[in-house]
Length: 463
Image 1 (cartoon, rainbow, N blue to C red):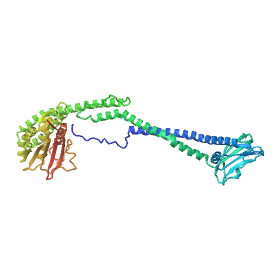
Image 2 (tube, one colour):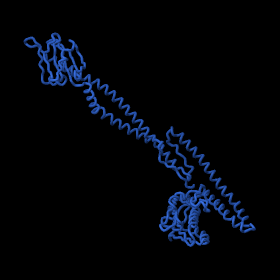
Image 3 (cartoon, helix red, strand yellow):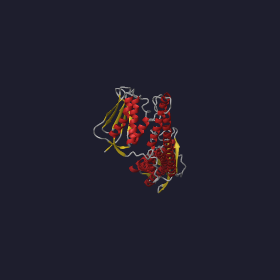
Image 4 (cartoon, helix red, strand yellow):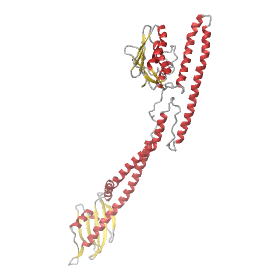
């Protein structure tokens, strides 16, 4: 196949990664679930914190009830131990008092400097419960009232807590989240995402394998197909359709190759007859005028036939041959043409034989095209140098103006001619490039430091 431009395999802006998209969506789902679970936990913890605070008040109220006894004079007396005093100070840091429910007499109280007297005795007798109040400066107060029965009588215990229960609950919730929930949720979330990522990579591995197989399908191997083995059921229709399209393309390619080969082959006989008739013309001037155009057409047909042979699967590129012998025979055939143009062909080759694997006829034709191209750009009296270097490197150097950098990438394209007025068909260098490629080598062009272009062929050497 002739060298053709290939589209870049870099993903465009409108493409997306299926793996990345699935990971993003699953990650978003996990985060939403985490938020919902955390919200439920916060609501439950908030309620639990209020319940816990109420339980603390109940337990302290029970201890206070056990600390009330009747004195010798018949009065109710409250004896508070240091431990109980510490608990009372924590819960009733704004105010604590014990009131006789029947007489309204306060048997003891502990007040702070910020005590708000307007909240004294505002609770109905016998009330047992909790409520929130706000002072004149907006400070929230949590009032906890507990009604108790003791041997000394019926009492109400009042706690005024200046702390914001909501804020305390929120702080407690964050503490619980940081010490209990997050150490469990975060490793679980990380592990789940890691397992999901590994699962996605394993699931998408058949797709990557199919993509690698598709990249190996070239014009040199048009019969290669995508392997259906272990392809996911959802992707299998795409693989089957792609293989069907490749079957149709291979059939069309073979038909095109046969058509081009048949056309080139069928044209050779009419051209031979036409040449004989031109040469038999009675007027030699007419023959001299027509023959150059005829030679151009004949050369084009010959090179089209060469292209058809290169594309044919029946032409073997697995023969072992000696490189120096092929090039010497090629230059020997072209020597009369060079002498007729008053130019020289100079070959530099090592004495040791260099063996390569490919097709000797095709390589000889490639070297002939490179030498013919070099002769066209070399002025009379100058030489075209052909050099074979160890490592199987072939260089053909002319004495022309060189190749401009702007057109260097186009010189091996089919039907491209740097000089539109030339007699070439634009196939010689393309055929040479295709032949070198079929030999698993590379063909490049550079400019020599002292003038002229150097075409360099690198072909793998064989033992």
